[in-house]
Image 1 (cartoon, rainbow, N blue to C red):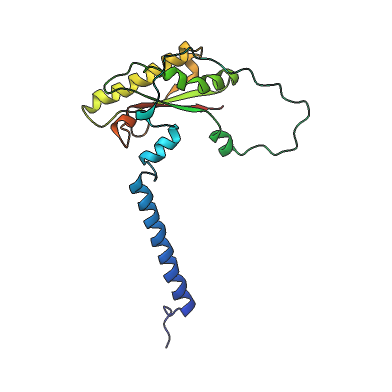
Image 2 (cartoon, rainbow, N blue to C red; image 1 turned 90 degrees about the vertical axis):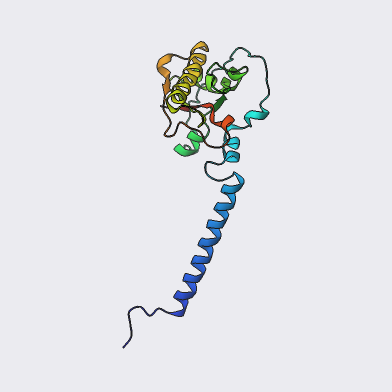
Length: 196
């Protein structure tokens, strides 16, 4: 009498390779995570921000400039398919403003980081800026959350000073306000653009 649990030798070979590949992928993910390139890693965040806060140049605060208005749309529709929503979302400008410990005043040169965002918002009347404030894990939690909110308010005031209407700036509390990685990277406000 044969059992229903008897499988062919090919099946056992497939299962062996399946687990070998799964183990190798898990080891690769752990390696990336330990080196800072994995999800939430400091190298990943630096790549997204475009620079490291410690190496950011210190420049005088210039006036926020705007980009010229976009060219008018052609009368004949192009023969290319529209870009998928994920590609369009990836091309929207974003910025990260880093703050000093226990401070919420706009740092020197922070307005320069917002130039692309302001230019896009001026060129696209339906777009909105989304602000999320973070803090480092040290100190009192309630004080730190208030500090993160005040940092986001400072960035909002800077956007308003650049001519962006208050109703076009959305204050959004991130899922976790305590940033990961180095404490210097956690003291930040992320600015993204939401096209509507």
